[in-house]
Length: 190
Image (cartoon, rainbow, N blue to C red; front, side, top):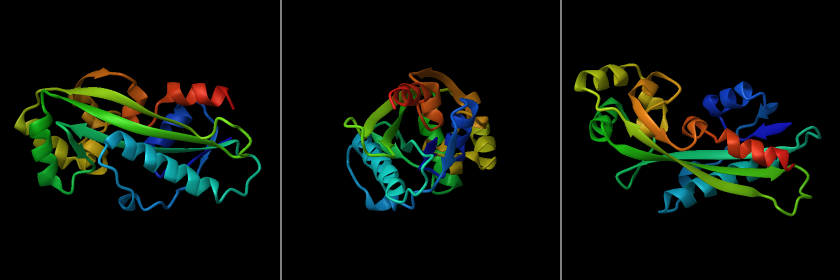
C-alpha cells in the first residue's frame, strides 16, 4: 500500500480514480522554512521533505512506499502560490489570460523498507498550461466562486477553472497534483 504524505484532496482523488490503494498521512512539514530560488529545485526539496517526514514516523508493516508531492505554478518567471485574497486572484487572472504558464510538481517516492538502492526516486514533471482569453466578468465570477483562493496558481483544472484552460502541453494529472504515468512506472518497480 502507498502512503501519501499530503493533505491535498485532489491528490487523494487522483489515486482513488486510478485505483491505487493508499492511505494519507499529513507530513507536518513547515513549507515556508524550505527555500530555493529555482522553482523546480524547490518543489523537489518540498516533496522529499514531506516523504522523509512521514517515512520517519512509519509503524505500519503494510505500507510499501511513501509518496511526497508539491506543486508550484510559474507565470512570466514568477512563482504563483495560492492567491492571498480575491483582489490578488483577479489581478493574476488578468495577467494570465491568453498566455502560457508552467505547473511544476515535485515527486518523491521512498521505499518503506529502505532496501532499494535506487531510493528515493525523485522527479519533477512540468506541464505547460495555456489559459483562455477570458473576460473581466468571467474572471470576477470565477474568483467569487472561491475556488482560485484554494489552489496554487489560482486555478483548479479539475474544477470550474478547467473551462478557462485552452490547452495543455504535458501531463494532465500533473496539473491536478501528481503525475499518474510517472507514479505508475515507479510503482511497477517496487
